[in-house]
Image 1 (cartoon, rainbow, N blue to C red):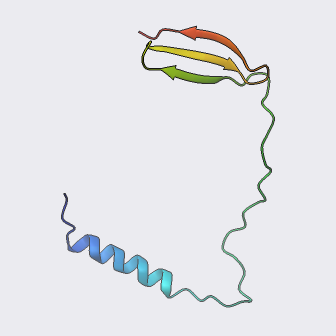
Image 2 (image 1 turned 30 degrees about the horizontal axis):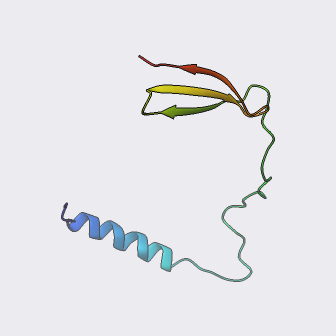
Image 3 (image 1 turned 180 degrees about the vertical axis):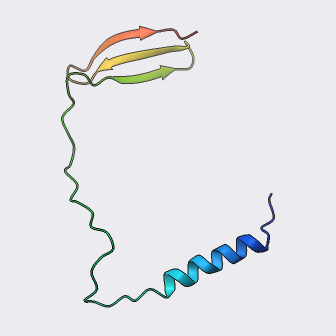
Amino acid sequence: MRIPNFSTFALAATLLLGACSKNNDEDAQPDMVVPADPGPQAPSASDRVYTSDQSSNTVSVHDPNTNQPAGRDSPG
């Protein structure tokens, strides 16, 4: 286990003091505006889902539009 040194504590204290000293007025504008989450997107025709099978050492490729296997590969 790594033992924290003085510079680690100094950095943590600086970050903590900086976060605590911010002016949190109700009228203050946000630093960053995050857009609304668009929700789940439909898969495009070029999307593929890759799954690996450790026991058979293969990678399967699936087409998410049809939920059908598109191929299988044995790497190496």
